[in-house]
Amino acid sequence: MSDAHLIEAFLEMQSVERGAAANTIAAYARDLAGYAAFVAGRGGALGAGRDDVAAYMARLAGEGFAASTQARHLSAVRQFHKFLYGEGRRPDDPTATVDRPKAARPLPKVLSEAEVDRLITTAAAPPADDETPLDALRRLRLSALLELIYATGLRVSELVSLPAGAIRPDARVTTVRGKGDKERMVPIGTRARAAVARFREAAAAAGRTGVAKPAAPASAKSAARPATRAAPESRWLFPAFSASGHMTRQAFARDLKALAARAGIAPGRVSPHVLRHAFASHLLAHGADLRVVQTLLGHADIATTQIYTHVLDEKLRELVETRHPMARAPATGGG
Image (cartoon, rainbow, N blue to C red):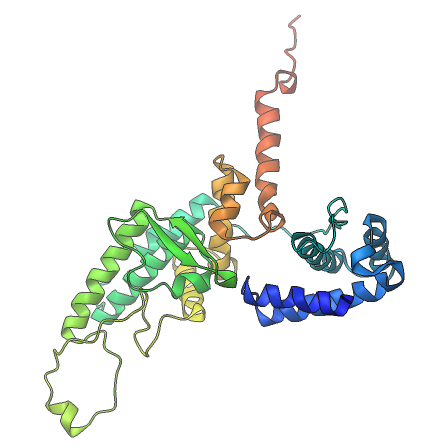
């Protein structure tokens, strides 16, 4: 088979078997077209060796591509050769010993444990005297969302689209469908389950009195109906109150920034993704294994999770400075 046909088979596998997004498939196609053109005179994809792959990476570097772009190209080439090896098209994987380009990745924005605690405490504060039933629902929903994202590290899109039955008071884990339509098991802490239960109880009570029912155009018939008729139960754990469907990512981000301002934290430092970073960083700071954090976050590649190793580096530095016998200042003799 020609390289073009091999690439086409690889892209089909990524789409059908792994559920890769259209943008991912398009990126693979572009990057592999450049690689195929480079190795065309070197035996093609089936004949290229480790030195050929390294030479391709050197050419990308020589052309001024950023380290992150080089890494993306290598990832595509590596996935392609793993496919060829797995399908028995060639007896080896020439990318196995090719080093990944070192990219200077910015450290993720992270809140301290004390700051997250302030957010959670502020969200769970007693209601105001003039709080309306709908305000109460929004307050309890935000508290549940905050507790849940910090307890699980879910992506915001995964969080807001959880189905109604995803979190149960008696279940310590739930199944989440993430990127590429892949499922993973996620533990749910006691506090998060309790916050979700409080919101669901309030939402159910509001539904019985019609409080949570989205507004509809008035008509003669609707005016004649009892105002306390129950609203239909939502299929979402965190429904939108002003429209059908679930709460949006944008609405959650907006509510978080307003909460941050009330907690005395700069709103620009707080977002759903920052809380996901906090979940991972705080776990590692308390001794969690990087591979475990990778699984919990739903990262396909450990390299993605390694952005949090700055936490481990800091912990190791502190360990050496406080525990190593030679790190202590020598005693000075009196005289």
